Image 1: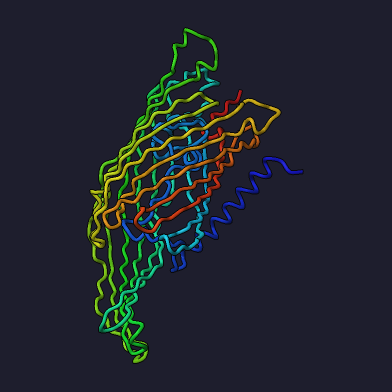
Image 2 (image 1 turned 180 degrees about the horizontal axis):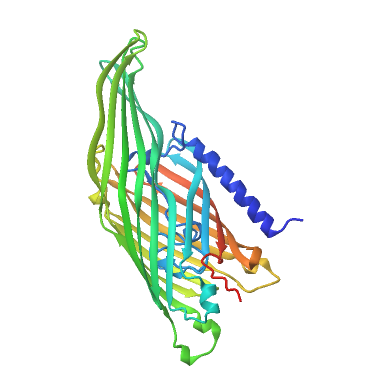
Amino acid sequence: MFNTRNIAIGLAVLGLCLGQVLLAQNADLQPKSNSPYSRFGLGDPAALPLTAPNAMAGLSAAFHDPFFMNMVNPAALGHLATTDFETGLFAKYSRLSDGNNADNLWSGNLNYLALGFPLINPINRTLDKKSNDLGLGMGLVLQPFTTMGYDLSTEQTFPEVGTARTTFKGNGGTYRFMWGNAIRYKRLAAGINIGYLFGKLSYNRTVEFADIGPTSYYTIYVDEQSVSSFQWNAGAIWTTPLHKRAESSNRSLREKNLIIGLYGNSATALRTNDSRLYVRDNQAYNATDTLVFENNIRSTGVLPGEYVVGITYDHTGKLKLGIEYGVGLWSQYRNPLRNEQLADTRRIALGLEYTPDLYSYNNYWQRVRYRAGAYYRADPRTINGNQLSDLGLSLGMGLPVILPRQQTSFINLTLEGGSLGTAQALRETYIRMTLGFTLNDNSWFFKRKFN
């Protein structure tokens, strides 16, 4: 007979197997997606919040939960009540359109691997009859930071040589590994993430003259760049009740809180190692000329600072409703290989989570966490002086699963829909689906006592 435990284990195994398949596809030199705007900067930015907060439009500044990790604002680790392992997969459907032509694309990959845990086990604290004033948390996450994949061509006509076709291809991306620590004392929590960003980007450009015939030369430009950077960000979260406890003994009133949070980081150095290979080739004469070959060109650029502030109304176990605003100083961005000027970004997001009845014992769907959100982001990339905009909606749910020892874990589903681009150029309409697994266990650091 099927039960929730078997379903959860089966989905987790299936998800990890699919993740291995998708990761293996990254070894292919062809781009795993075709996103023309990923040519600029380090590529398309990845969603950094994990699946649960991402379904709430990515709310992270003022988000904490005893069962879910938030590595974007590390201060939230101070509120973890259980060891939390999380992984996620995503699939994305995109439709590219310039008003006259359109193309449909699918892509997908493993989204993240994360592990977080409280350094003070809450069971020990309860058994020892100690207060809940102090909390310590730690977390680790490995996830994409940007992704790049494009394949497009343009044509120009010259009176002397006819049509010149230029083909652009690129692939690669960057990843980040972060280690976070947090401390919470009563209402105030503070934390810091430190980590490492790394990745490789490949830019290919081919120019050929189709009207001249097989005797014409075509030119191939290959630029490759390995990047790395020390990463850090710090945050704080203040949680305050919306009433005086002495005024009422009603439990629901005691659980209504206002959460104020912020996080950010300064600009950091971007270390690059570049190589260039430019060749001119003629297949008819079997002739190849190397125009440029350079290797191990080491330089240093700049990754920008970012600052985000948010506020959330939290009726514990019932409703979370929040808003946040952030800025990214991408005008500070510098990359020695790519002479690009990016613009500062702004992002505003609204999100909520609603649970009809957390303690319902005879209606499963009453215990499900329903999530929704909306967001607007001014992207750092510009086309012909027009800054890209990203506008979208998100929906999701957290399906509780009871594992052995009555520990609650979750299967998280998120669906995002949005549009990226400008009114004057190519626009990408996308639907992104994420499947996440949250496995909780409160037995870590549990002190067993023997008489």
